[in-house]
Amino acid sequence: MLHELFLNDNHFTWLAITTTGDLLTLLQFPFMQRAMVGAVLMGILGGLLGCFVTLRQLSFFSHAVGHAALVGVALGVLLQLNPTWMLLPFTLVFGVVVIYFIDKTDLASDSVLSIVLSGALAIGIILSSLIQGYRGNLMAVLFGDILAIDLTDLILTMLLLVGGSIFLLSTLRQQILLTLNLGVAKVQGIPVQIYRYGFVVLLSLAVAVAIKSVGVLLVNAFLVIPASTAKLMSHHFGRFLLLSVIVGSTTSIAGIIASGLFNLASGPSIVLVQFLGFVAVFGWVKFLGKDA
Image (cartoon, rainbow, N blue to C red; front, top):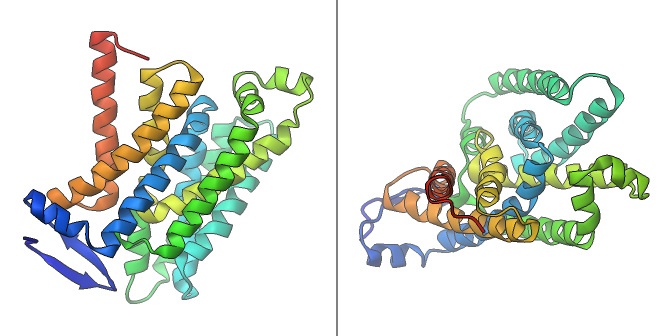
């Protein structure tokens, strides 16, 4: 049976299971069912976007957006609003502003990202220091808790996944060309700026949605590791995309189960499983020479 299981702020914050029967019992709880559905949705979304993030070398961008989101979280807590509703507009504005700065300056993109990230992070830390009393909402968003997601979070993730899939898959040829050769894309008349800003908006919103599950500190891994793992397995873009989605969703589910089996935090457990999967695939490809 469940060794320890108690309620805190209307969701279960600690759990440990030891048998298959305990696992099946745990899966009957609504909070666990929501977490599993959310893991699949966010795994697919992370895998889909991660392909373009890794190929376009936007890993540092998603890292910056995730960490700068601390400002949105702190503002939400200070204003006594749901941090999720502050995260969405803040990450969206931050992502667009960063790309605008990169386009309008002669500085390298990593320099611009470092400058803006440092400023936003400093503001976030100062705002966090102003928070009095209970900081549970802030801590949950920093470290993530997929077991705490609700129906609203699932709906937001589903809408983002559907909208993102339609946008990326309906313009897949243009997106691939933008990824591989920006100059050729411009010559062929593809509206490069519209697609670039559209992808940044999508990526920023995905980061905001994923933060509640894996936390500000680990959200970048959620996008990068599954796609990087898939890239080791195949260099064909179609298979690469499919494998990334599969790796993202399956490792998310495995991470939740591992968190219950070993009494670990859910967000870090997901990322740890993804990391171990990457290491395993790397060893498989490196020493056995296997790829798709």
